[in-house]
Length: 481
Image 1 (cartoon, rainbow, N blue to C red):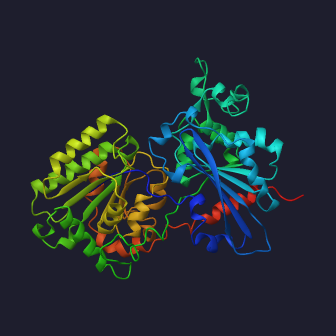
Image 2 (cartoon, rainbow, N blue to C red):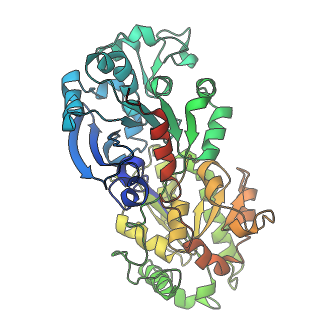
Image 3 (cartoon, helix red, strand yellow):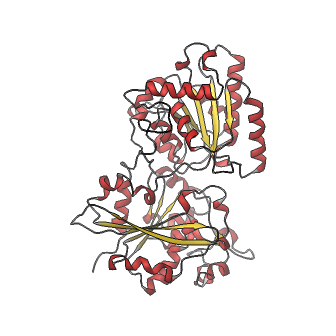
């Protein structure tokens, strides 16, 4: 088993995917020309950069979209803990260039997460009355656990009267009512003031309507709340062309995957030559994750102990042999909780000298590509997972997913034992949050070799879901009078 600890893999949110083949496949019927503005947020800075991108001509419409998102999609547990005072919002002067592109205004301003959740408030209560009349706002929420709390006087610093938003109908955090001070939530304000709200999987939408303090707000705005799966960038994540791999492969010829597996095992000292039986039939389990509670850390540590126990107690067991856990977080590679970091450092010292386990507490994009290519099983035991990309990338590289049934994992991985939809079966799914449930799932993959080609042929790109964003843009755009 290999465990790599990580930050979110490069995401293909709509703001990012406009530059790839998604444009030609999905937008040529709707777009004549597109203009995108990226507001890249860093502490004390929120500034804009503009670039234009040509789209094939169409007689039907002329969309212009502005994308507002945090810096390169790096929404890890450090950036989400930024305080409101760490941000400065664009002034009307800074926003003015949006209205000057080709003498027209964008149809859509697309914002992401709480860090840009204040923009819908600014737009409708400030910019809309100054010069921007045409745009409509779409908010995508990638993780509902980060609310963007601030005080009313802090919100007032951007030019709005923060006190008018301190109501349940607008932006007050209901959990703080009666406290001193009461606090606002930029995410809630963004939900209320946006024309459409999207979260990143249909199942996560259902989960957020049933639990969490924002459920009431989401229910009140249910008619504009949508769940759309993220996609992966199939140009970056392509085993047939991946420059990081020692050998290339695809669904029709997986010999290169065997080379990648052997390359990783030898490189990490997992001694494939010493394994009992046929090494090709002994699965290599990989878990690439951030070291945060959301990712099911107690289940991951259990998997480490469980695989180690199997190898020690049954040295001739051909069912499980190698497990690699790697951290996937931007440098420095440390867990947000120091206690968690120390626990996994101790586990690494304990297990990394053996022949069956490796725990790599480091960030490396090259290593992530090689591990996905080498893996036979990709483990994603999240407690909650709004969408999840590891299972999609794993399948792209021929790794069969073992996942907990939640959020986007439930929308992309379907159990091999589910007789109701055998044609969709592509992995192994467990529902509990206890160690026994995971152990049961780890004992199941006897059929993993038979579905490698099937999972590689599954399309988890934006081809299946990007058109749904276009439908939302079309439904909320302001029509010419």
